[in-house]
Length: 287
Image (cartoon, rainbow, N blue to C red; front, side, top):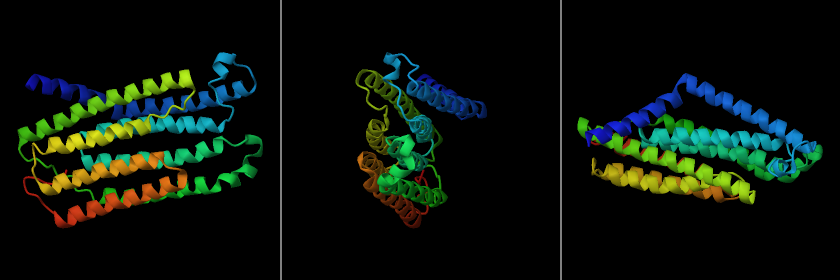
């Protein structure tokens, strides 16, 4: 068992160290810039009919889709950061979910305007003013609420016994590794579907569905180390938060923004209530 724990921790820690290192972040940033510029170039080549037909059919005609593409890549990177945060703090992982949701709302703005004709963009923009305004305001509201949410986090471990704490963290790292492979599988499937059916590459709805079951699994595993009602209730509420976020991803722009803001307020209220009524659980507290 110790050998298995060591393998899990080594695999997770090595990946996280490379991902979060300054060098790794610079590489990821460079990749985003190159991908964005490449998308712009290919879009222009497609508009000029300089690409072979079998390639041009996959390239959009609007330069604005390059922004949407860059945001999609950025969201993919943020999902990986969310997965890594699961091993450290459930509450921080919930915050990461809202960060991703805010970016998805902003991406929706560029998705809406990417369907307009570039030549008459500013005239046609009035037709989509409501959806892009609701998405923008919703994203900003989530960002503001998230600041208050993070400020209220206490980050206290639910397990005080050293061996049990290592065991619990290792279990969460194993779940995180499974999520990484699942997300990679979703991306591969989305690319395959895009090539075959020309569907938009968007693995985030499916990922959040998987995340709901993952949250429930973490709640159940945590019961092995802490039977506290308060911890179980808080973590279960966070699962409900994930469920509402998943609903927001499927909703039209205005309802999506309303659900996003209401869910962010809900998560913040849960954190305030938890900190107010459960200031200290002694051996079992709030991480």
